[in-house]
Length: 376
Ligand code: SF4
Ligand code: SF4
Image 1 (cartoon, protein in one colour):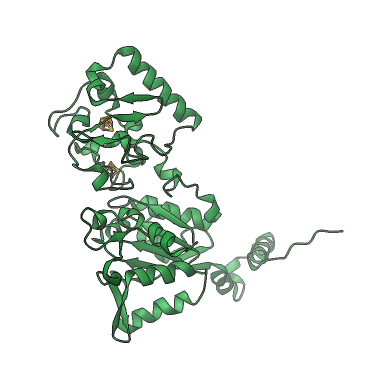
Image 2: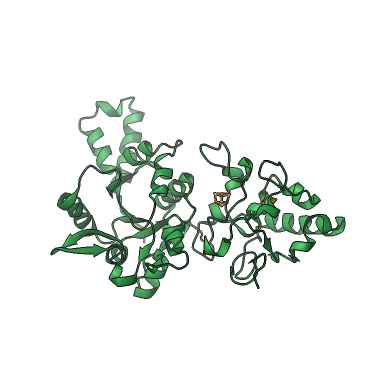
């Protein structure tokens, strides 16, 4: 029996292009070909909700230089796939009923759109603390939008630490009862896949890179860590890759932010934070927090900011793979043998790809292993 395969429109166009090229003709000479080609570009509608947030993650994404946000939104983000941003409160021209209609029209295409959520979702008082639009004279809560649009989306990108885990709006005493998308979905039994792209704000590359991966290779291709972040961007520990790591190992600690030494004593959360900030850096790779002399405050981690507070107190009892460091043993107190042993162990883990936190390892359990100085 001969196996058959359905010829898709894309296959047809590719074969046509090959034939035309073989005849030495320009594709553009063929009547209607350009239109056909345009029609073959798959449009991925995106609804972008801005909830309890400062809009910083939008500003960060809009500042993307390479590719520019214009390229992402106007051109094909990957060959054959074009992101169509249908709704975004800050940048869209429409407002009122016209804007709400865009949401409704897009949401009719079940599992046919991507939902980007920026900001946390307040739960208290029936979600009255954050509403978008109204129905019958009553505001529609962020909770309702997230649940309804999230249920029908093909995927949800929780952009920024607020959307991913609650972030700053959920900081103690959390008067609005704010939580992240994942918690809303857990409470409501919503099974739509959620990709967390944290950061305060999130790096534009993390967002655009994740969208591009989903479009190129599908959702399943984005490998996530234990708190739902793409491993490609959050699989590395900052402390392991920090250019000031040599100072840490040698016990040279900065006493003020202008000093070029390790910032551990000033509260750096690099040992308990995962992201590729040291290599990617920010603002078109110009610099990053530690490079500018500021301790990492752990903005990409679940539980930020409470779990990282006080931000400028050093973490103690840091548990690195295979070794525990207490604050008093770090730095000068580390013997050469211990330092070498730690370095070799970490390098081995990175080389074999085994490095990655389990719950309770590094800051996987913010309430356990990594404590602020003075805490029990
Ligand atoms: S503690 Fe911070 S500044 Fe020091 S080496 Fe680690 S990540 Fe770098
Ligand atoms: S270095 Fe730390 S605080 Fe700065 S952006 Fe990266 S994870 Fe956030």
